[in-house]
Image (cartoon, rainbow, N blue to C red):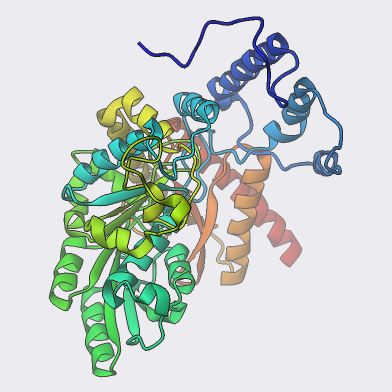
Length: 499
Ligand SMILES: *Cc1c(COP(=O)(O)O)cnc(C)c1O
């Protein structure tokens, strides 16, 4: 068996930036590993988040040093000024936005990837092979054909952008890569008003312009209203516009709503639209046999974007874009620079290269932590953790409904619960909004729990997102208890202020 871990020899020469004292660095490395694993193991006993004090911020703001600092010293500063002030998403009571909680195994895989320092942009080596394996796993999970291509990217923001560029280039032809939109028909695309901001950005960046994305209202469950979509399509064609793409949401960031993807696939087929699914977190419910039917229609998508770092808990950052027709994907990005031409053999073999499927050339070995996570836990356990969060969201929704001082503000569709504190004495809407904001700020600052805020139909809402494999049911009870205690206290104070 070949090994990249040779026998140790005391006489090895070292590079100019290699450690001067290998044994000392080795000891430091083991200590870092132990302490970081300790911090993950004991995460429940720490505050979710603490604001970074000015002194810690200032301690970091030093000029770039001309002279070396010992790694022991650098690590000391990391422990004091960086590590305590992390985002907080490793904690079981981090409920904000949509964040994954990470895993210890994923962290180790990230370390191994950094150790190999592979550049997964191209050429013939194992990092690219691992990426192909991971892409293949998800291609079959979503029921896409073998010709489908995929690329591991930083996040669904970039995955959405790539999908929009592929859809645009597929419609206008590869010449549009040179011509841009000069002489192009007025392309328009469709998504619901609940589509993620990164979809708007994809249209801005692709040159199509944000206004080319038509926002369709949603139904009571906050899914795209397909009848209004069809009306808008007809009106746009009437007005001489050229519809070319339809974006379905598998899990909206506000409320977790999943559009009726099968109906959208029908509309896309009939209207000859590129059908893209933004499934940043929601697409991963495909891993749960019980939840999977909610994605019906996703297997007919032309492209799918989803994150590994959210509901699969792979350490930041990692996401994926899949494209049904791999040739169209390649045609949108493939380059021909002479120094990047794949060879028949040698290190420059292994075509096609990932750099021909997206805007990035140099790329880290992100696939390793995804591969490691899936191997370590298996799809069944990962799917069960997702299903558990969905059960918890349903439970939390029912606890809110049963609570005299809380009001549910949106149906619980998946893993997100939106509600507010409402004291018995009626408050003016702006005062009630401010009260709920104050509750969330106070909770975050206390370190007890970290939900976030959103606005639904003009109403400020406490938003609890469950993409957290460490959350237990009693964390939810504690959350509601803390919200009502704080709500009553803050409402009393505002009474005093008002009276
Ligand atoms: C998070 C999210 C995105 C953006 O993904 P990033 O990984 O943050 O780039 C896009 N769409 C939805 C629905 C999301 O939840």
